[in-house]
Length: 254
Image (cartoon, rainbow, N blue to C red; front, side, top):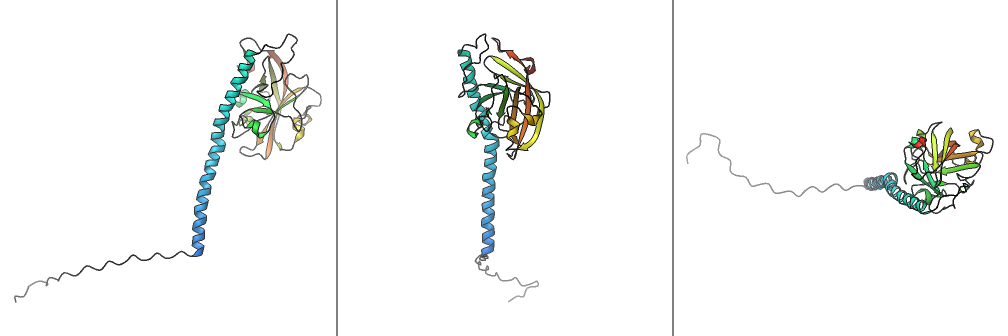
C-alpha cells in the first residue's frame, strides 16, 4: 500500500449519542412559597390598578352622565312649572329631583345639582347634597340659617376636587327656579376632624360668626384621595337676584 505524505485522514467518527436533557433541579418548599407569593402579589397589583382606574376615572364618567341627566330633568321641570308669585314665596320643595344648582367659578366645575342628603348613595350621583343630619341644613330661601353642602373630592364626579382653589372673597352662587343667591367666601378651614359638627352649625361660630345670618358652607374630604379629614369653606349671602325669562346669570358668573 502506498504511504501518504501528509497526515492520515481520520476515519469518520460516529456522532455522539444525544444525551437526555438534564433534569431541572427540583424547587424546595421555600422557593415554591416565594414563587406563589410573587404570583399572588402580581395578581393583587393588577386588581388594585384596575380598582384605582375604576374609582378615579370610570366612576367620574358614570356620575357625570347621571348628574347631567338629572340636571336636564330639573330644568325641564322648572320650564313647565309656574314661577313663584310676587310675594316671593318659595316654590314647593322637590327634594327628589333637586332644589337648585351650585356655581363656584373658582372650582371650574360647572353647575352642580343640589339634592337632599349626604349619604354615599346621593353623592355618588355626581351631585352636592345638603345635610339632614347631624345638623339639619337651612335652604337658600330661608330668612336665616346655614346652607350646608357636601360633595365628593375624588371619584363619582369629584365635583369638589378643586376646593383648594377657592379663596376668600370668591363668589359662590346658588341658582333656584326663581332666584340667584350670591354668597361671598369669608373664611376657609383647610383641615378639621371628620367629626367636627360645629363647622356646619346654623350659626357657624367656628368661622367667627356669632349672630344669625344667611350662610352657606361647603364641605368635602381632605387630603386628596383620602377621607381622613374635612375641608371647610364658609360664605355669607351678599345679595339676591331675580331670575329673568332668559335666566341671565349674575355678573359673578359671567
